[in-house]
Length: 114
Length: 115
Image 1 (tube, rainbow over the protein chains, first blue to last red):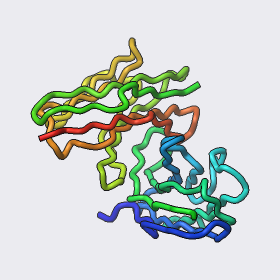
Image 2 (image 1 turned 90 degrees about the vertical axis):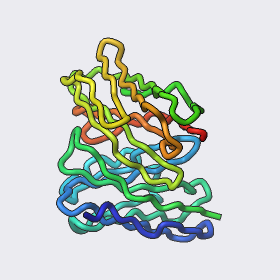
Image 3 (image 1 turned 180 degrees about the horizontal axis):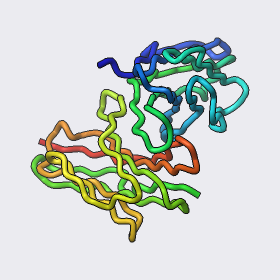
């Protein structure tokens, strides 16, 4: 069975550029999560969707970050304009339902903003 | 406030030793779930186990075992006869139902198993 698929695996770009990260959740999972991992802050939830609807975006750092889920099999996390402090590993995860269900993670996107 | 504490930042053992990773949590909710995830050097996060707050039964899966004690708010993870492939960062996480699906992660414990 295919797991959560993220692309790209690595992204290096210059500050000020727009960055788009992509995620395909596990088929049949109706909750999708975006996390960011840094040495300073550890793993932190940015936003999550249930049935394609954003439920909690309180972790989104600022207006430069936006996330969409146009359908059950695809989500994007966009940063515009990007800044060096956005450098991190971004994980997408999915689960069946909400509240207490195991979240299954993708391999992550390692983002470097120069 | 919800919080997960993994006091051990790094642990180093020799192969075949047993090792216990500690996890202490704080929550005011009576219904919650605890998780352990493994992050090997390749970077992905692998789900290991889930426990709900009403089930204090310990669990064993091969060389892995988990000890859940509500009285001490702890959910510790033991690896028996450790192997080099167990080297990874291990995260404990908490989900409380009132918080929706938000997972609160501990800071992680870096386990190194030396041959």
